[in-house]
Image (spheres, rainbow, N blue to C red):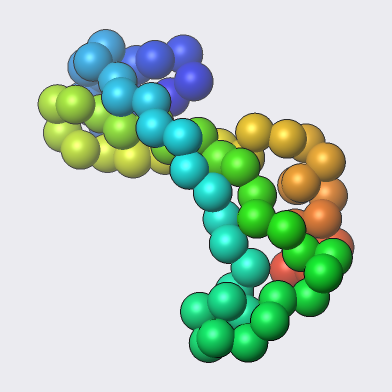
Length: 71
Ligand SMILES: [Zn+2]
């Protein structure tokens, strides 16, 4: 999808949306651990079929996620 073509319908009309992943603890109202900041992601959304893909912007954030949530 980063090549700006939808893998499902092959449309080249792709919408790019900035977004973020919030610490899961925030959903329950608890204070998130200080080591977990919100992570910037970019959503790629196909304007034709609606398929959406999300990419983490910063490789450092991926390491944090892997450490915390990896199997
Ligand atoms: Zn599509």
